[in-house]
Length: 88
Image 1 (cartoon, rainbow, N blue to C red):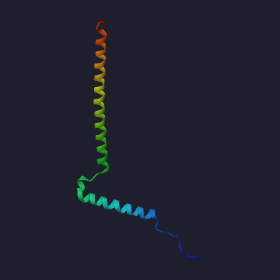
Image 2 (spheres, rainbow, N blue to C red):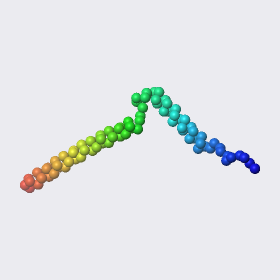
Image 3 (cartoon, helix red, strand yellow):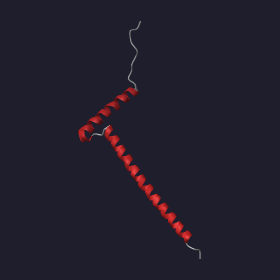
């Protein structure tokens, strides 16, 4: 009777996950050391940047819509002026 438990071996995925985990830890530590605690990117900071980017896109879109509306109104006014003029 064998008393050996289930055989566990180190597979390629286990090694890859370990290396990736260590790499993330090293990058995080280096980032903290290089740029400092106050400048670390956080989820809150990323979310705020996304909100600001959305607002900026909305502002640009509103400005473009306003310009298109002005151009359409000017074109319509020019068309009305042409229609008022008698044909010679």
